[in-house]
Image (cartoon, rainbow, N blue to C red):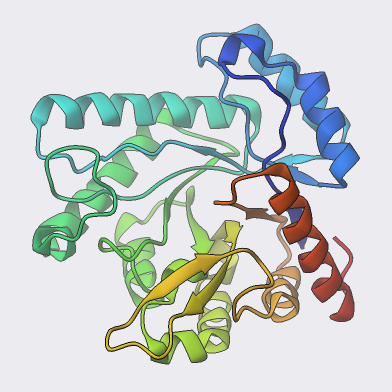
Length: 286
C-alpha cells in the first residue's frame, strides 16, 4: 500500500515557528497522503502531541524523522554527540507516530563527511558497529510504532539487498526496518539497466520489513570513460515509476514513498505530476 509525499514550502524556518495545522493544510493542498515529520524540539511535548493529532486526523502518514549526522565519526566526542542526538530523533519519531527514524549507518572518517569513501566503512568492524548501534537505539527507545532504519547507501555496509538481508538477521529486532532508496542501490551500468530486478529482489527478500522509501530518478552519463551516475528530477532519468510503485503497492503495510533532493517548490510539483501520471498508467491512485 503506497502513501505519497514530498517536502512542502511554508516559509517556516525553525522549530519555534512550526504550525501543524498549516503543514497539514499545505499537504492536503498538494494532494499528499504522506509527509516528512516536522523537526520539532523533542522536549516540546505539547507541540508534538498537537502535530501528531493534526496529521492523524487528516489521514496523512508521517513517513520519517531524518537525522543526518555521522554515527561512525572517528572523533570520540562527535560520535557520542551524534549518537545521543540520534536517540532524541528516535524518541521524536515514536512520539509523533512516524513510520521510522532514518540515518545512514555512517562513514569511518573524521567529521560529518557522509559522502566520503573509506576502506574501513566496508569492513566487518563497521558492519558490527551498525548492528550494535541499531540494537542499542531500539532497546533504549523500546518503540511500539516507529522503526529504526538505515537508509540504503553506497558509501558504507548498507549498500545492497544482500547486505540488508544480512543486517536484518544480525540485528534481530522486530522494530528494525528497511528504508528503501532505489537510486542508492544503482551503482554500476549493470544495476542501472537492471534496476527492475533490484526492485523485485528488494520486495521479494525484504518486503515485509520495508517501512519507507525515497523516490528519485537517475541518469548515466554517456559516452564516458568512467561511470558517472547522477540524480535527476523524476522524469529525466531511467526509472519507471509505474513499476516501482506497483511493486510497493502490493505490500500489505502502508509505505510512504517520498520525493527528495529537489530545490524548488515548482520542481517538486513537476516531479509529483510526472510520478502521478506514470503511476496512473499502472492502475494505481496516489
